[in-house]
Each structure stands twice: as C-alpha cells, then as structure tokens.
Image (cartoon, rainbow, N blue to C red):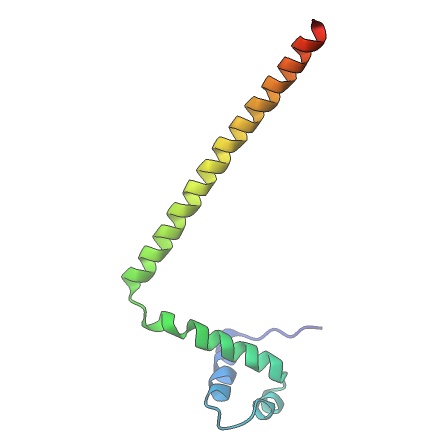
Length: 101
C-alpha cells in the first residue's frame, strides 16, 4: 500500500537532504522513506523555489495569460466542432442528392 505524506513533511525531509550534510540514505532511514522519493522531493523543492520570490503581479499576469489562452483554445474547439458538424451534414446531403440522381 502506498503511503502519502503531507506537504510539511516533504518540505522538512527535502530541506534536510538539500543541506547535503548527509547522504540520501541517512534521512531515508530516519524518516522511513526511499532515497528515490527524497531525491524527487528535493528536485521539486529546488524547481519550485523561484516561485517564492516571484512578484505576485508577475504570477497573476502569467495565470491570466494562461487563462486567456485556454479560453481562446476552447473558443477555437467550439468553432471547429460547429464547422465539422456542418460539413458532415453537407456531405450527407450531397451524398443523398447524388444517389437520387
């Protein structure tokens, strides 16, 4: 059965491993987790550390841009769906007209 760990525990273990005063094996034994799991948490901690110092406006701007891009993509998908349905109906009508001739 897979264990799940809360965020505070992951941060604590990853920070301890990031100090590099000990091998990954030592905190793994101490906290009863695998060295691979600690390595993954440490990597996530390092990759996400920049967000701590990022200005809120920049983060909000990036989120807003992502939301606008998502909205535009949904609009495009909707338009393409309508066009696709129209073409299917047109093709069916043309096929029926040709068979009747």
